[in-house]
Length: 618
Image (cartoon, helix red, strand yellow):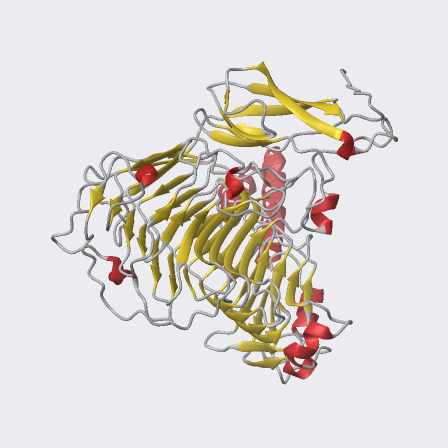
């Protein structure tokens, strides 16, 4: 290690000087002292290196929890390992079937993570059958929806890899930050496959299938804020990469919910019951290079819209979605039913006013998929959102698109296989057959990206327009002079440049204790931000945990007799800076940041009581 080498250098220099000390005698005792000090430092360094390396433990089905946990004397349970490990430790679990619930409470550090992995070329299996089976788990009051592997909020920097989890309630549930969950195979679950709620988590190369056996909403892989803290309302910078998800009952294949900066890339998702991919109550998401499709084995209920991808909002009290980028994805619907790219055509009842704010949908290929942009019930307004360089191709005679309200949307350089609706057309559009190769099979687990390749005579070649998308974290541009329309199968025609300069956005409330803040943060110039001033509580709040994590509340000490739902939003006022607010009279609206700090205030009044209007003018 570098640390060991750097501590050894004084020792080497001191050793040379020590020969000189022995020749010169007592006048050089200080030098001898420095040699001894260097020796002590070297020994301490060696101890430190050993501590950093941590311990390696083993678990096997023939083990004993009273053993030493070595390769020749392994432990019997993963739970024993979870109770023993400390920062820097590694646990290898041998092949075989285990039947237990495990909770990891100890955490590692960036330099000393805790790793729980399958032993090389072996597959440890956690199976709930011997716990009463997954049907028993779903109704058993003692276990409820208990995950097989749970990572507690304190267990940061933990890696889980190589397990097969089956016949349970929930596969993995993580509350901590910097957690890695990779190369897991999860199937036959009562509810969710993987839940990751901590900042900077990585969910990579997992296979999740057949969840939602409880016939209720479930998710294959879910990036979400599991902690619901008002001061930290969004889970940040979670990566969902290279996973395969299928057959998730009534729920979503991949979901990011109440998050900021999620990256969803290079996943394969098919035949899920509701949405294959769902981006909800999230901002600054990048969804790229994914393959989403439906086959004749589609398990969606007849009364469910089949969503290849949905953008929406469900929590009226949370920061609204904005700055989401959907780029270079491939979508195919081979089922006998229609399927959709739903961009705010639906939201949970009560979140009217939400829409696409600063979104970019670019260079995707949609086959037999209808674009539906909303906003829901036409109770909102899109702002500064672009739909560009996409292929919309239908061979089944169904509609290409439904655009109830084009205001705030820019369409350009898209290829439509037939004449699009008038309000979906734009400059640089192409109407005609995109001439895809259609290579390979389209059944479950068979479709590949090669199906979406362009033939040499495709009119989409070289006809794309230059891209510019901005989030709080990236500028997205193209780095090829000739950009195609539709998805690119190889190479990387897009550049994701980290934003270096951001400016603060402060959101205040009047009265002051109607605490706002949803939308506040640091943003780059030109970014469109969703700002929200809906007072709390509201009848349609989605979950008890979310209801407790409020942004708009009246201080019960200063206003014990003034309930929050007596407040009515009036307007937005700009205190400083030069932002552009789409609609100053709308509680949920969009703000475009300038190059500089911004402060705005949401003004509220109290509802009329006994024919008197009371306004708190503080």
